[in-house]
Length: 423
Image 1 (cartoon, rainbow, N blue to C red):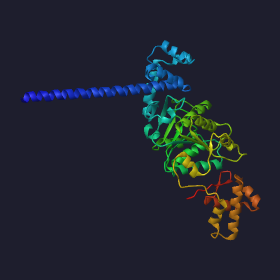
Image 2 (image 1 turned 180 degrees about the vertical axis):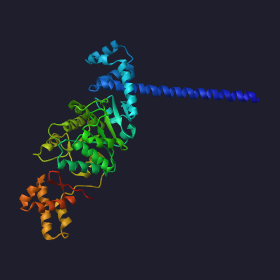
Image 3 (image 1 turned 90 degrees about the vertical axis):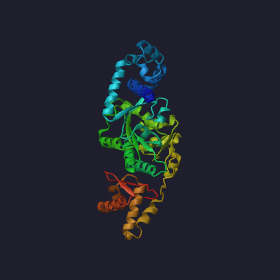
Image 4 (image 1 turned 30 degrees about the vertical axis):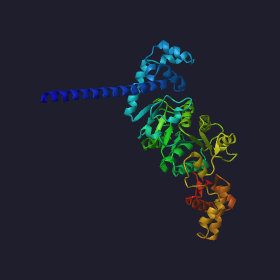
């Protein structure tokens, strides 16, 4: 009897082991299929980076990215004839698939990865666009699913020739978002000017940020922003992203292709400053074409740095940024508990009346109002307008700067700072 019982136990154990082996084989098979598909998408992305719709059509026609490389050349040529893109046929070879496999191994060793379209870590909004890339190179401490999942993505973009007005507003917008009920992911392009200001403000405010680059994932451009780029890559919830293969250097045309990713990832785009022509204008128009919300910071009519923003507002492509509470509400981010203080004069009077002697109070108020009425005025020009020595003007402007009423740039130009309730 014991022998029979033991035989039955052994048979059950053998059946259980076989079931487990079958499960492991199936899991391995599925993992291998996913990996092959990722390799295929990576290889096709290298070939059709500027024409992703053609690559996507091939994937659909042959039943998968990896399958494209298993079909004979004549079938590939036939498929490409319909798109008028037969020139690509010679590049679709098994050697390209193998090269992509080697590339992905190297990326993994370098702490990077490639996220193919259709994978859980691929940005869902980007997939909805007409021309989404077949995949994205990704570098960050958090997985792509965590970075791109859950919270809304908002692009903060604009000119490289950022003015003190634009810099101040860029920081305030990001800081207001950091105080909102729903805290978003800030997306920009890691360029000098508005982009790096937005990234830095996000990091300093505790918001996650993603930099979409116009180079390979192994190159940070411009070099002056390398430290900021490394900081983004090393911060939880943040990442460097690009659809360009490793080794790609900065080129003018690359930035145009990069802009569609910034617009496509985000549910809303905020243009801080831009000339009539520029990358920021293109990104804003792309965002509008994707049926996303677009906002623009209005500026002086005679300021070239604001002409692009003013134009988008006039064309009803963008809504003007004004009251920050209203902006937060329109973005669906909740109320941050901050709104613009419009009475600048009253604020200065409240700060200094009774706390300094009458002569200093009058001088501080006059300097503050002079700066408010003449954005970008130099300290030398303040001396001429008020008929006071440079040392006195420097003393007064330093006090106002320290108390947060004005900002002074490296060229000694002064601008009034828009203050928030709660500052």
